[in-house]
Length: 409
Image 1 (cartoon, rainbow, N blue to C red):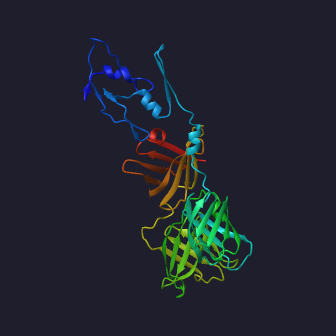
Image 2 (spheres, rainbow, N blue to C red):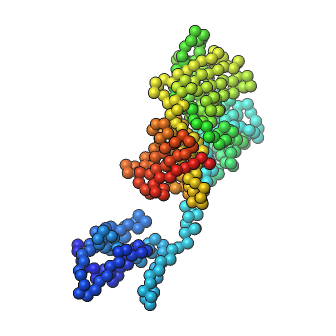
Image 3 (cartoon, rainbow, N blue to C red):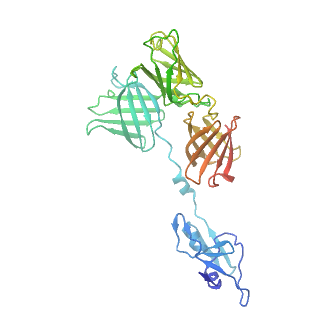
């Protein structure tokens, strides 16, 4: 609907702090055409009833209506014909929106002490899918078999698992230590038990990840024993640890455990003498046997069942912390949970606390990863193999200029 501009200018000031272009109206002057309510106004996600005016490609809105909806105040000095905007103190609001520090973290925890130690006590606590609302857990015996598992509800640094009204486990987190209190009935663990996060799960790592989940098939040799396990299953692989199973010809588990990683090599210690050492080279894993386990016989080579398996060259990304520069406004990129196919990331504001964006990026090919949020918005990571990662947004929203280079800290 077209209207003349005179009545609108009497009650409206442009929303921009600098009014551009400036409109004037004079009796007998040139008439102009403008469109009322051609553009819908939404403030903080809520539709506004304020009228808008579209003229020559620029939208004009009532200054007071918009700024007050944003929490600011508007004052007008008639003597000087000056409109002033006063923004509220936003420090308290920023403080409230800071993400809560993670109290619970996924990982493996080893039993350190119990009130009434028993050989039957589970030796390992495994926490997965940990958030500040809940997590899944498993309590494993010394052979890695699950004695109890479930999902718990979190309240701060405490968590509760209710099997029944009487059978309850209470978890308490303090840094890398988790204490479990047992309610009568479960008998797991005995009394109170303290579990400490395994060193391989907490140490920082800048090693390119070589290990990946998959099914590996034994490559027979002249020395192969008919009783040797024929399948190796790798799961939950990171650059610091992974779980494995060795299966016989009938897919029955012959051995299983949790191996600690050092680059392309990994070690599983069952006892001081019972040790399995593993080495990965692309789509092949070689297992060297220590006396005692007899699994496998001597040295065995397992090849990835999928012929298109990722190799050590697939991902050049590294876990760790990267900075966009040394200035006070530098942002931080944190890469974690790196596998051959994906990694988790966070981009943090220069204050070191506020998370700008986070997600899981899928590795598309060597040095290229992508996190797609919707049809119009995605973030792309390019690793130049020299500890520089370029992060680009498909639509400029969160990052300055849409592209930022991050350098290894």
